[in-house]
Image (cartoon, helix red, strand yellow):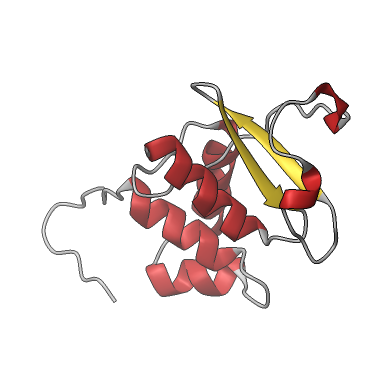
Length: 126
């Protein structure tokens, strides 16, 4: 609970705080109203922050967001990259992601999204 004394003031929230509250409010089994009461803000404020995040106006430097990019499905017959049989995957299907600076990331299709995100961030940072 926050007690405001004197002249009423507006609270300032950092981008990280806003994103943490939005993430908390929309987590499975969570309630926007409960989270809003816990942080002593209006439910509509949480929805506003979510709209800002979706539109790209609310970003965090510590939270890396991978944008969706166009995908092109092609055969490996053009000879580019290593032969498929030199790479292994439990599903047998590989995904090839072309990144900036002519880098290509080849990963198994059964890799979890958070692992893919970390790999992309690591390769882009290298």
